[in-house]
Amino acid sequence: MKCVTPLLAWECAGMRRGLPGKRNKIYDRRMAYSTITSLDTDAALQKSRDLRARLLSTSSDTYVTGPAGSGDGERVVVLGGTGYIGRALVPELARRGYRPVVLARDASVKDDAEFADAEVVAGDPTRAEDVANVVAMAPTAVVISLLSGRRPNDAEECRLVDYDAVVNGIKAAVAHDVQQFIQISDFGAYRPELIPQVYKLQVEGELMGQHHGALPWTIVRPTAYYPYLSMTFGDVKNGLPYRIFDHGEYNVVNPIGREDLAEFITNQVLAPEALGRVLPVGGPWDADNVVTLKDAGQMMFDITGREPQWDVVPMTTWDKKIARLRRIGKMSKKVAPVAYYLEAAKYWSVVDHVAPAYGTQTLRGFMDKLKDREFPTGSFRERMKSGTAMMPTDI
Image (tube, rainbow, N blue to C red; front, side, top):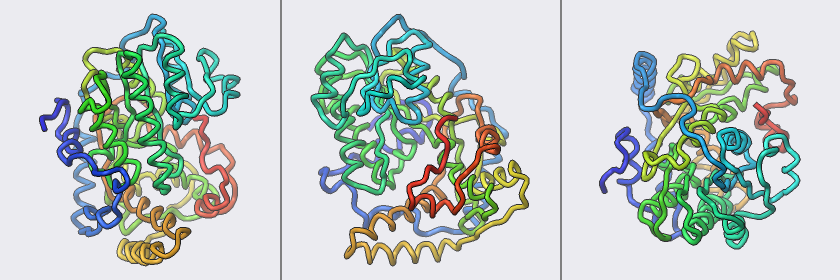
């Protein structure tokens, strides 16, 4: 398959892998993680340090940071607009002259400040009729999907949200002659290891192949968001150690701030040069934003004024724990999701998420805003089990 995007070779990798098979067989645990189970500790450490050094000594000129283009009242339907990224994207669309419309399960969000200049329509994106209705209410120029399941270890929820609901949006866009469908995917789709990434790759393939009908499309693949790399900030602030696997430098990531991503997405709205493009994007190639997990931990210690205290877990021990829980998970539905969380923790600790740079915000700047926040006591794992909010979503 010919790559439709001239940006980077990384962008073509997901397309060359081919599409997943039947939907009820889309995720096979026997195949998952086959690419990351065997690690050369010393080689990985050197690779990450070399990659980070190259990024910091190179300018990224794929994108020009700053608003590009404005609207003239065009109607833009946003699916998933009440989430973390949506609360930055919807105001940005309004500021730039578009008319954002948000499909929300809870219509009371219309009273939130972020949606003051948006139309909020009650509906569930997993119901095809709700999506079709919101698109059909008035001439719609663009549909943007930010949809992503909240429980990535729940295969059924991932299918409903990351695939079915997005396809509902695609079909509605085709049926009502929408000029552009923008899918906010995942940088990990170039090498899918997690359930949501596999579904996102399938959506990408179906858009490219016009599987649901002719529809101009744009795919955006962000690297990672700041809250994900800061989830244990509360632990560090409360005096607990920061966990790393072995040396903590298996991978490198340049995360992107949500306001920067919102601006980037809005730049693509009805932009002719964005049509038929796969656009991987991350934050600045800056020492405060290009990090390994150990770098992220060191930032937390620096910002909180603590001496570093590492909880070092051997990756071999983690692999054995995953294998044991997988075996138990075959007999216990309660254990299977726990095994997945361990697998996901490994994924985010060893797979690089590096993309062309956009924006000005940095991870350190995000963490600086956290240092005066109060966090619940107890470890991240304890708070996760109890359902306690783990990270502010207002910054």
